[in-house]
Figure 1: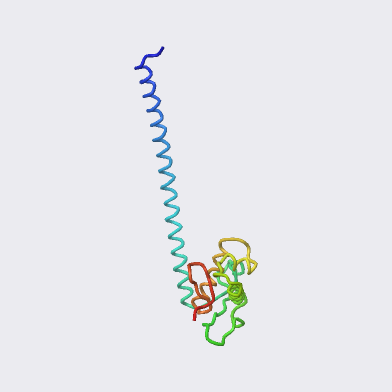
Figure 2 (figure 1 turned 90 degrees about the vertical axis):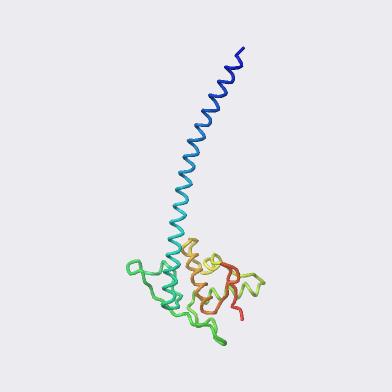
Length: 164
């Protein structure tokens, strides 16, 4: 029969070994957390820079152009068309085709009693591939339509017909 002191010493060694294993795991997890936080920080900076650049471009001209794939890669600039400011008596037929389809989709949503349309549904309605870039392009167009008075954004990312 083992001695009580021998049992306690064995328990101590097991506990110390477990503590050392946990310290090593903690160091690994802390490094992973630091790496994830750095990736998130870089993503925030990239998003903020992109939003700022898009806002600057939007200030230069109110546009609603083709999806990103239609823009030539070499120049980075594609044909753009004006989105007129909404005013009484102006119909969606004056909008570029993609913007007119977005407005029509929102009108259908309202007619069906919906609460608004998200960029994903717009992307799907436009027949664009299911990518984040295309969804962002649809969102950008919807926000342009909000800026120009054609739509409103009641809750973030939920687009409805303009408010009176």
